[in-house]
Picture 1 (cartoon, one colour):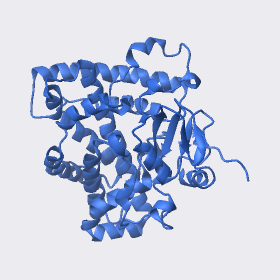
Picture 2 (cartoon, rainbow, N blue to C red):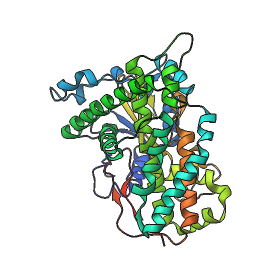
Picture 3 (cartoon, rainbow, N blue to C red):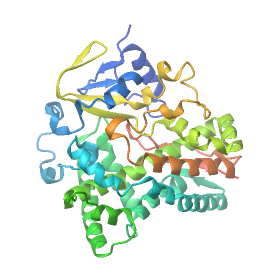
Amino acid sequence: MTAVFFNPLQDGFTEDPWTHLAELRESEPVHALLTGGYALFRYDDVFALLRDPELSVDDRNADLTELDRGTLLEEFDDDMEFESILGLDPPDHTRLRRLISKAFTPRTIEALRPRIEQMVDDALDRMADAGTADVVGELAFPLPFDVISEMLGLPDVDKEQIRDWSGAIVKTLDPIISDEEMVAAFEANRNIDGYLADVIEWKRKNPAEDILTAMIEAEEAGDRMSPKELRDQVNLLFVAGHETTVNLIGTGIRELLDHPDQATLLRDDPSLDANAVDELLRWVAPVQMSRRITLKATEVRGVEIPARAFVSTSLASANRDPEKFGPAAGELDLARADAGQHVSFGSGIHYCLGASLAKLEGQFAIGRFVRRFPNAAIAAEPVWNGRINLRGLDELQVAVN
């Protein structure tokens, strides 16, 4: 049997990663990566690893020898210590998540429903007027960006500038990144950090009924976030709060246009909206992989993974594992009974804080799109964003009339 190596740079991977992931899931579910570390491809292994309390997400616990870039990033040394909950273990993670959660409640999310509905309808009106429109530029990007901006109470910002910075930053989540991309990411993070520092200072002087004010004021037993902690959490919410939802809406609509039977099913049955979004999350996996760090030698399916090793969990592969989702795992089924068991938002203590918001935005954007435009058709070859992990579209031209 020919050896199979995880290679996201091979021709056709961006358009169809699933065939390659299925090969690995079947032939080598615990895989030693050529770039260092390991990757898991089966649902049970991915789910168990994400929930394992004996693993870390803090890069300081990893052996970074193989990732050393010499003096390349020396000028960014002061910017490379992040304190967002995405890269912290308990008890620091527990403390910060508790403080943030006080400003990110189900009631807060539910109160956004009318505003999200209006934003979606306004975008669809513009698309209808145009006749042919870019789903990403008109709907998938501005909706989550504007929602998180309003939630945080941010002043008017240059969307395209933030989009460029955000796109550069999330490239660091890819398993392979060039020196040039790494430098661009840290420059972008420095820029957005400076912008957010100014915004937070402005917000302190202009408090309002918004999440940023609530985060500034969040306190428990005399505990508040430090200025850097606050800035890093807002940075995370700002970037993560729209990047993954852009991918869900853009690729979700593309998949429905490629599966007209499923689009018709959703169009005719609004009661499927919530389940349909879970199935699309399973199907497109807006975040393709997550990672943990071993604190001690760990065995998975007879393979010993050494201490201080990065272990990537292929969320995209796990979501299509027939051992979990049955022989029809490779089919899109908006009525799938167990669609909600996908791992697209992770699992365990690091389960995505914004999952309910992303689902709500997806339900309105995707459901209302297919009902407003029953004859919509892809008008040009989709343009992919070039990211391996946060796989999505930069452009999707659709004729809507």
